[in-house]
Length: 308
Image (tube, helix red, strand yellow):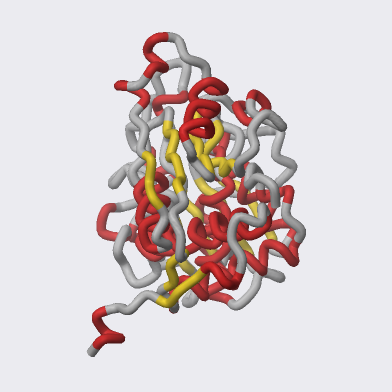
């Protein structure tokens, strides 16, 4: 990989390779043996994605260059390209970027000499979220062939849905969608089913929040949980080994009953944990593919448990 912009750029073999690398980093503590800098350029709010990148970077011994758009030269009119070029010139070895534009990557394509990771592109894609979702499903079921996945919620405004539909189908999962009227995305060639069909028939229920900030007009959500969300009554109808997923942030009491966020079927917080390791794997894969690192550039980190 030269950059990580979309899961679509990876072959199935490459997807499995990244998943296995993430599992390796989950079980082993390794650090690079020389100084490297990674800049996290987040032009949109983020809790899980930005923090998990930062934790992963520090676990790997990488130096983190932080960035806050509200206190940067962006307020003076600086373009995304000039911001990225600035960090490259200062010495960043990699850029992690989240931006509100669906196609921000094309502003930088073939213009930088360091790898770039897409940490979210408008409504278009969220490939590292997709990869951690794949890791969570893989941990649970050992594969994807024949696994029935329902993605439920604000499909129209979801970059998570777009990234996941393509990858899951390619890996052999049976994907369907469920959305309230007006929340559908007709560009996705996937069947729509009701929420009750989804909870009764699917192995994975992937819930999405209503993305109010992307709506052009006010959206009424009164009775949304009862009509379209995962209630406690619906959870009881789920298959015995089915799991609940959600990219978060969770709007408790809207798309899911608050009591179900941490129920036995929920893997929501495991997804967050997996986000650290999948992002570590992606960063290391890029650094290796660019020749910045090789297998001789790692050292095992002594943990407290190892010292004992």
